[in-house]
Image (cartoon, rainbow, N blue to C red; front, side, top):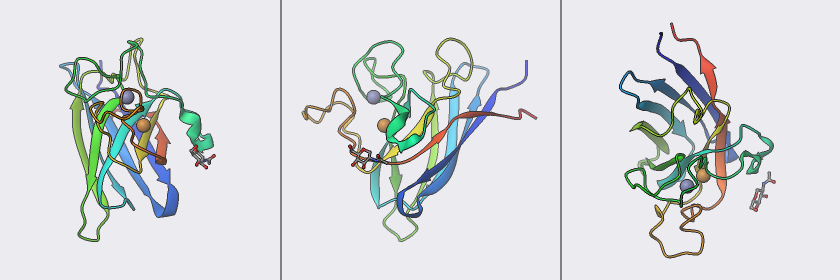
Length: 158
Ligand SMILES: *[C@@H]1O[C@H](CO)[C@@H](O)[C@H](O)[C@H]1NC(C)=O
Ligand SMILES: [Cu+2]
Ligand SMILES: [Zn+2]
């Protein structure tokens, strides 16, 4: 079986753009890599949301992808949404770019919990990873507005 690959083109507010690639590795993990520019400096919540629907912009992508009915958490937590990929970081050096390199076992590109056809979402604020004590910490990480998103689609595996 050839390696499954997927891609999401990220479009957002005020010039935010980028692309994120997904590669399903033989060991069962999915490697996520990419580059998003036009971010404000600092940490930004980064998630897989349940729906690949951008009818009303990123607001239509639904909640965090959560097939196991867990509370929101950090990628390294047992209690987390499958879609919880933590934060990405954009430097304050003027580049406003976040480079992404994440390996995660809960976001396969095949099977019942596949993320194909769902969405990648970038938020305005840091994800508190469920630990901020805010009323939204256990559902969204209180990461604020959805400033960019893109739908995850299959990519040629050659
Ligand atoms: C998305 O939701 C936020 C928060 O409710 C709202 O401020 C924003 O205007 C909405 N965006 C669109 C495109 O509807
Ligand atoms: Cu999100
Ligand atoms: Zn979550």
